Image 1 (tube, rainbow, N blue to C red):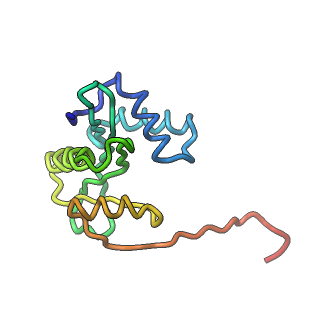
Image 2: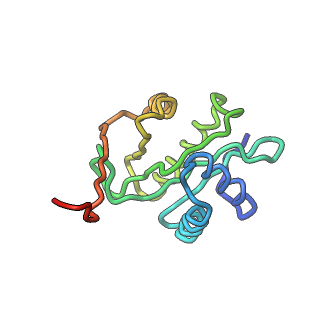
Image 3: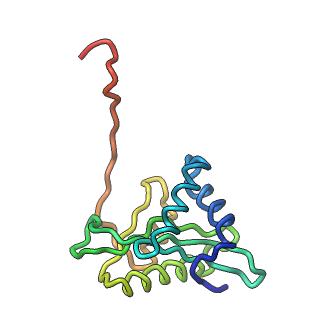
Length: 152
């Protein structure tokens, strides 16, 4: 298994894995986001894990952010998305992917790396902890429509 930067030929596999990671993501939105990421190489990096059989088994998307919860410096490297195919999990692939993202962030001058996971993704939280990430906050987000609903 090798981890390397995303190549043009990897984009279809990357898009499929993004759809698996974020099931609510619409195809058009996925296409738009991928184009934006690929089009801004000074702000984003994508690394893929390629098996000996030349299949893509996972990816990590990293970015530079001005701020990340729990971080004291700016810019901050950030793990925007991290996915490993089920058959390749718990084999070190995820660790290699995150390490590539961290190495990229260091090369951009970052001294901290942030990430997040939804509350329900306990497996992802444990994976972060195994890689040395420390939980800094939990939150519940709320939404209310402000479209008039017959009164105050």
